[in-house]
Length: 288
Image (cartoon, rainbow, N blue to C red):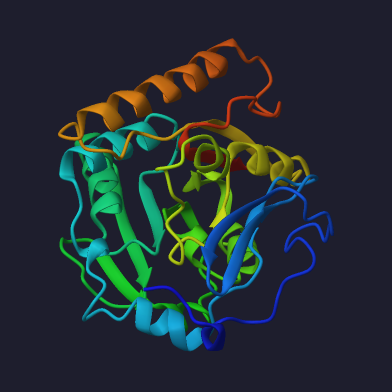
């Protein structure tokens, strides 16, 4: 399902974050009508030069059709939850989690279980376009309801969601404003632009992915945020199934180079040099 000319908004002439008008680094997302992804040479955000309109996106994510958020790979979710949990440090015993775009709340559920094992109480608010929750201590609000929410949270999760949102910069800023002092923000985003240019069969998941948001963008973004410190910035876990042997081992090999670079780095605010990773994990902590 790709958007027709009637389903596309007007062409974007400037970077949606920094306003840069350099549009030389491009990747074709679809040919008819032509839609390109443009990577900004300054802030490194990659964005579709025409966004699908609201009607198209509403149909694309119709809960009767779109089921991917209802099923989670339990083992991968557990590993991701443990990865996030290992970076957290709290002095108090009651933790509030916001799981934005969290689907059935599986990730926050796994994190809650890790807290509970250490006698720390935790609960989660899941915000999504429809309610598919499973589990205790997990509550739901629609995206519309959450717009008026003024509560702060110890942990804000945005796993594999920001790239789907046409106005992701505004939503990102809003999510960061929800992080309590000494709290954490976690996100997982795709970093596929360079990989798609390098390997022909590797395609960006257009039109679900409207942005490509790699480690290079995140470093640039948080350089301008004096109230946040980067805790973790590294390649994400491999999403490809082991059953797809060739692609799985190729992904592992490419990610291993990035991991080697990560272990050599002293400054977490230095730009990652290896972009062929597929996805990126970021954790930042808000200063007191």
